[in-house]
Length: 477
Image 1 (cartoon, rainbow, N blue to C red):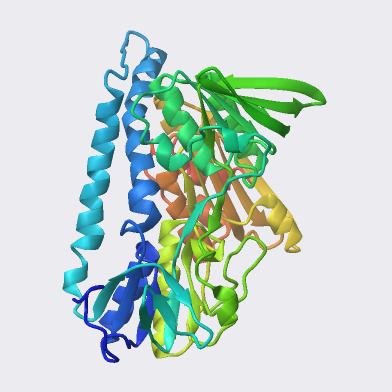
Image 2 (image 1 turned 90 degrees about the vertical axis):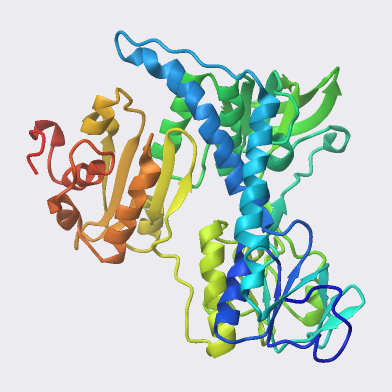
């Protein structure tokens, strides 16, 4: 493996494939191409490993699991004769443990992986396109007939008066705070906002979520409503339907002035977290110089084969502005690499893409929502099952959530599944497989499921299309 210090020469700077971005998508693309015998330049800028391992999935889920124990203790009283308590005694130690895991996985899954692939040359630096399609990295010119862009995304910063004067946090800096704040305002009700909000609330901060469209606005309304209720029951205040006027500092905190239902409101907290989405990292690539088209938010426009508007240039992952999940980035990157090296025969397919929000209760979905199914022209049938009908939830004395299935009314074919449940994330892949196999709700309802599991709720929800499950005996099938 060579690096940025490799002597400049035509051979050293010419490759079969150049991959821009050294995160999960970049590594997936580089490894896939190298395994097919290609000579690959992997160009990384900033901390190797990208968003997921460094500032996204890994640190947030580590902290979610840590504070989950606090909630479990507080919820123990739902069982008669059981009492438990828990508290954060050393916030800096929690943060340090989280960072140790990040550092360990970055080394194990990225840095230490590279030496296993002699065909991959790692080049450190910021890449930009030239008019002829070459890449400039510092004073070095990298040439390759095929290029895959996998530069990821960054937090979106909204344009609100006064924000420049406020010491705001994003999801990265929030999980690096040396001390737990007494109060936190979270702007944004998407998956990042709800996950981070719950971490801090369970750790002991007073948390208010402010949002224009509610929690998880793209989810089924039954799911959004159930999550909002669960958060409210935990003491997390959710204020939706807001229009933002301005920010100002106040003492050691921040104040948001907003309008809510026609009335002026003042929302104050020690810290402000911005969770208003993410934008593709394309600003430094000089895409316009190379004739690579982007959408309104800066994402590279690609076709189903992951090809951009410039011949030989592909893009995958968050930089396209769609399907911002690490597993979809890796999937798209592998597909792009195979298309780039072997002809464009493979097509990106997200029709059965499972999506998970690691709130508690967890939110998981696959396929179409009811609204999407109607827009696609289906005569839609739905089933909505409250968790009070799922024996596993009754045994756990935790019936927060619902399961909603969407199907074509005439064929009974399943079109989508949407779950909010304390253990919902581990159930969604069963629904994904059902959709992939083209199953009907009769097929799903007739399958054998293990009793007293959350996933059994899918069977019960399938039966709910045509039966009243409240009248069924346990294990009646």
